[in-house]
Image (cartoon, rainbow, N blue to C red):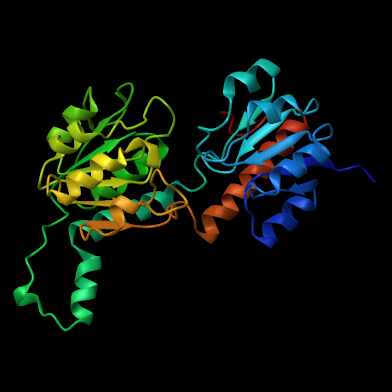
Length: 312
């Protein structure tokens, strides 16, 4: 029997997915900060592959301790906490799960958008309290407005596809324009925020996008504008957002990601014009299974010598 390749897993997996992976690889499972140092120390010299997620990553010190390491995969699309310079200098292959949960994230983004624009959380509470519609201010339409997308990657494009069904005019800001796409390009995030009614952030994390949505961008969005973030929490300045929501400088925000994860953002939680979920946009049985399947395909391709399916 062929000896299984040692694989270090640094993210949580349900038992079924652990079993799926363990059929092929020697599973070294260390999903928590408490388990991780011991698992690395005990197995560092044997580990040939690592499975992690973007917000967890792997440290340069851990990479240095693993002389046999040849593959690092992220389960989702994000890879902001991978030391890419270190990995590339070592010739270590990298791959992610790009495209495996895009539909789930885009669905969730629209749930947040409709929920906050139509005031669903407050309406639910008011209805349960016996408050009838005659004394409730009418929430605005979602359809027929201007939607700005910050980050028109694969997820951003899925959001734009759904937006078309709501007759939304679509604009976007990226590092570079996408001339092959029909949507209006804005050269800066500030210009996009000034134009749109709804700003949806689908940008990756990392230093280049940290606090890109700041007080100036929020003021440009304005008192009738709404913000949705399903990208990374670091993209939005939490203190600036709290002030804008509290002072009515924007109308509302729907967040699936936030800087304090996994702890709730204390400065936002008491605000009624906030709709928030615990980084669940990319999570569904279908999406997670697709992500695990993609990892298996990436790892199989690498160790068979064909290369990974979705390289970073």
